[in-house]
Length: 370
Image (cartoon, rainbow, N blue to C red; front, side, top):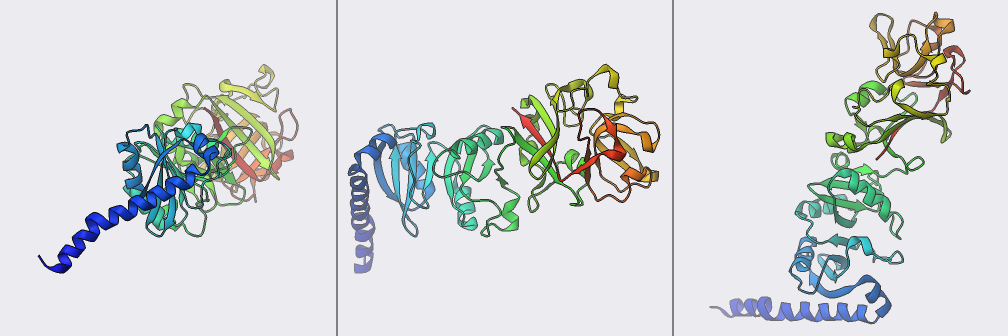
């Protein structure tokens, strides 16, 4: 064995462990100096590691009750791995993690792929947690927004819930990665948005809803939350609404229990609306089948009315209802001609009104209550 081989083994097996141990002791001593932080955060040990997965493994192998870990960058490729006795749900609200740190909940595997995502994105995760589904991951994102580092983006895959402090539209995210992520949006009155569309965007609203289409560049389409077909069964109510200048100008809330994405928009399921008489016997539609998400379609005249809350037809000038989405500029009734695609029309009063007198909204949103 050559001198270089001996020296190499000496450095690898003796000197490097000593250096890592010394640096780990220094790191842990640093936190012992701040006893208040130590008590609140429950740090039970520290170790120098070179990757997220090695920090997570250190927590799993720790014998003194490690439940989570905080990975703090020291320099490129080297991290201080803080081993923590508390779970992700007992983080003190006044804790401000170091820049670039990642909170890891115990036994969240595999995370090798997450390291690859993080390295590519440059955005940096703030937490890696366990979640049973994307909905639970979304709820964790909402919870972490109340802490000093707000969650803006989530990634869910195979039980891993990865929370990011930056939006997917951050310049470091390329288009191939955007499809895997969903930017957290503030809920409207506590409801979770599952679909949105903007006037004059060119989107065919009903087709986008049924086909679960999404355009993250514009923020339109269906939330990836609905890619998991079992999620719909967890929804209790669905709210259809239109907005202008960020103000809600109309809404109808439907009972979603036992429904499907195709049939929840049904007059018999209405539980609340700003139109108090929408369920009144006085205003039963003359064709109840058209009070639906599919609505009315006539290819000969390019008629495409979806999410159609109407009362009755008595010729174009006398058609009455509460709201409608126009996916085509029709050649039939004058009130649906020469409109941008899509257009969102609604009554500004509580009673059904003539479609010729309806106003136009800027945005349509579908939100869900779980």
